[in-house]
Amino acid sequence: MSADGRPVVRITDVKRTYRMGTVDVHALRGIDLRIERGEFVSIMGPSGCGKSTLMHILGCLDRPSAGAVRLDEVDVDELDDNELAEIRNKKVGFVFQTFNLLPKLNAVENVELPLIYAGVGFDERREKAAGLLESVGLKERMYHKPSELSGGQSQRVAIARSLANGPSLILADEPTGNLDSTSGEEIIRLFQELNNKGITLIIVTHDQEIAEHSKRIVRLKDGLIVADEPVNNRRRAS
Amino acid sequence: MIYSIWEEMKQAWRALMSNKVRSALTMLGVVIGIFSVITLVTIAEGAKNYVTDQIKNLGAGYDSFVLAAGKDPMVPPNPKFVYADIAYLKGQVPEIRDIVALNPGSGRVKFGRSETKASMVMGTTANFLGLMGGNLTQGRFFSEAEVDGRRRVMIIGPTIARNLFGESDPVNERVKLKGDQFLVIGVTEPRGSVGPLDMDKRVIVPITTIQNMLGTNKIFRFNIFPKDPNRIAEVKEKVTVAVQRRIRSDDFRFLTQQGILNIVNNVLAALTGFVSGIAAISLLVGGIGIMNIMLVAVNERVREIGVRKAVGARRRDIVLQFLVESMMISLLGGVLGIILGLLGAFLIMFFIKGTLVIAWWAVVMATVVSAAVGIFFGVYPALRAARLDPVAALRYE
Ligand SMILES: Nc1ncnc2c1ncn2[C@@H]1O[C@H](COP(=O)(O)OP(=O)(O)OP(=O)(O)O)[C@@H](O)[C@H]1O
Ligand SMILES: [Mg+2]
Image (cartoon, rainbow over all chains, first blue to last red; front, side, top):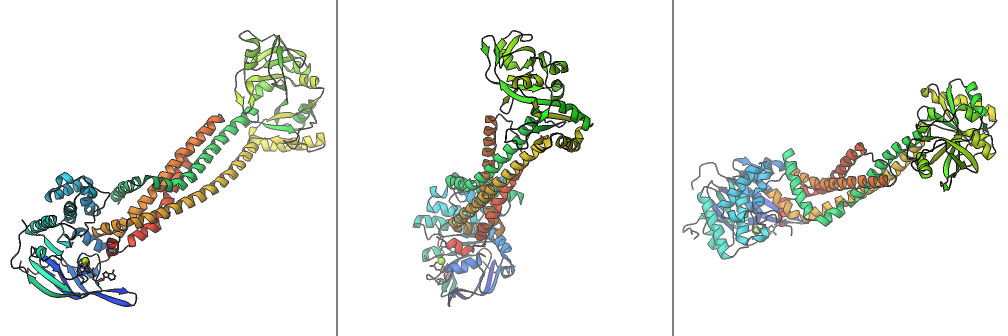
């Protein structure tokens, strides 16, 4: 995918420092990253290198200690908390390793959550959420609680939720980390399908094989990018 | 905003329902507080009505007042009033339209082999019927001449008539009261009870006759009717002066409708203040309980809050979610308290045979107060929830 001058993500010299009593933990030490529309990027690196920290900053769940973050042509640094919430609601969809579905709500209600905060009325909301569940192959599981779903199914509900408000960017932090290889394969195939439809994706993974399903791999180490290269022999999920 | 409140209410309802026992226990403080206030206010309202009715029935209506012997109602009086005082008072205070004299007593009425239990025997003057209300269903009332002549005539209540005479006509029958023969000349219409007094078991005789029988010429009570019912206070003052001059003491008292109502209102106000204090404490404790449970709920749902924030909930959405939930607990408690309170008042009124008067202002106020308690004590937990950092909340185990 060639640069068209309107990247989905552009961050420059992003640093994130946690203060632990008297010591400073430098989780990110100066990250520059530009991701174009339609890309499918894997972020890899050893544990503790700052992958999740980076994802949280990209997802507007956290702010950098220094540096600039531009999402979809918006300077995130200048936004207040309410505006950040709106970005999380509309522009980014987050997928977690542990799914993070609300246990008391059924599948379709979980998918509806972002729509509620976007102020979408019940009928429209239900229709849209049902459509999204259908698109991830879970139409028959609409009224099931998370406890009645398998890990793979739960993650697909979470992906449907992340898509609810038509975001510009999907962020997935180790989305297959809690899944067996078959379910993981299903999820990665779903991601490839979504990417084929033009959705921009960034996933964090420890699994080289999973990463090879994406189009580009960014490697972090100690809070810095140490490698950033396209995937040459891209795998296709079966 | 309205719409999202509705959404939050549905979610709050589910949260409460998923923890029924805890929710019920949490609302208990509010239930008790609202219950006690509603019960008391409803009973007080009913009591005011009841007392007003009683006073009217006892004769101290809006158009008259009572002059009774004895300063202290708790001490048996030693009356100094006599029959001639009626004329004396009328002469001294020209604003008086008329005066009814009353001497209460009791005795058994005998007819042949039948005998009543002790009935209320009331000695009075001939103007009693016209001024103090009531009608006769049979016969006539006694005349002034019969009072002056100390005639042994009596008017009986309908229950006595039925008990002694069954279906036959009591008028012109002769009965015995305290050993003396009386001629029944009339029957009063049914009126039911006034407090402990059953008006239908009452016997009315000329006041002079009963004085004669008891060997006294004293009178216990006057019901004084001013010409202008709006000038009761003024007439009362003039009567005071006249009576003091006459009996050379202040061993007498007045009863007015307003006076009795004032006493009742004072008692009720004191009681209301007391119960309101208890209710306020119970609402305070209930509110703190709600706050405590909401803090627990926030802690239990840190992850949920993180998820909601991650998918776009703003601070105010989270605040609203928890505020609506705490308000709902409290409001449900309030509504339950109102229902139980009205039920309690209804039962009490049922047993004392009063009528239930629902004080709607109290119902509305209880609803508003209970909602306010929930909101007030929910603010702190809700703000804590809203202030959670999303990343930390999502990491929380
Ligand atoms: N809230 C925090 N307070 C202090 N230090 C933190 C906090 N969050 C993360 N860190 C530190 O920042 C560094 C990066 O953490 P991060 O979670 O981003 O790593 P990661 O690459 O996602 O690791 P993993 O692969 O294990 O998930 C780590 O050293 C971590 O200990
Ligand atoms: Mg991580």
